[in-house]
Image 1 (cartoon, each protein chain N blue to C red):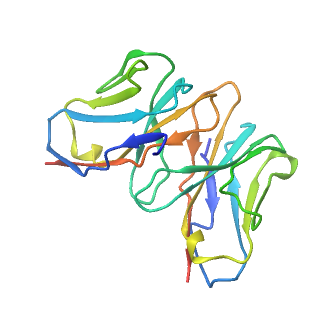
Image 2: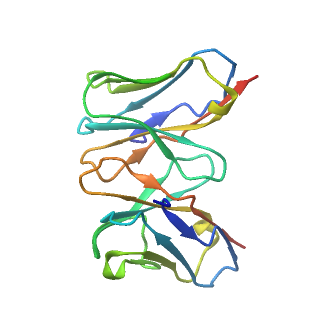
Length: 110
Length: 113
């Protein structure tokens, strides 16, 4: 069993819809949680960073962490075609070595 | 700030050949990381430098792999006697010790024929 599980999708939604992404993990020592966006042939780009359980909002993006359930989520409101990418969850025990999920491919249809 | 730069962007080599990749981190970032990403998977941690010191190596990094960061600036990742299983995207990332954000380069795509 992988430390971090993420549904690979693909996920296809119409423009303006809410995109919901999630990951589960098995290592209870994880305390730093991140979401990255990766466009084709590019490196991952950090979207959200959270340290504790709860919600964090940044523009159209909301990240949720539930440590008791070992479950994290990312919501994208008012999705745009430019949001079409692969979204990777990542987490770490200390703040330097990340364990990534496999990524979910999202397509936002115009 | 020009971001993390990786060269070459693509490398095609024959099995058994040696290859070397270069990473130039964001200036003044003292932490530098190498990750490997295969198709349909997330990046996997390979190794980590703080300044010129290599502080951790993953078990994924066999003895055919070696990484250096002379003078704590750019870094190189060398793979000796390449195998087809080494085909992957090799990603470099850097960060400042006071900044939790990891900045990735665009990677070097290695294809071993």
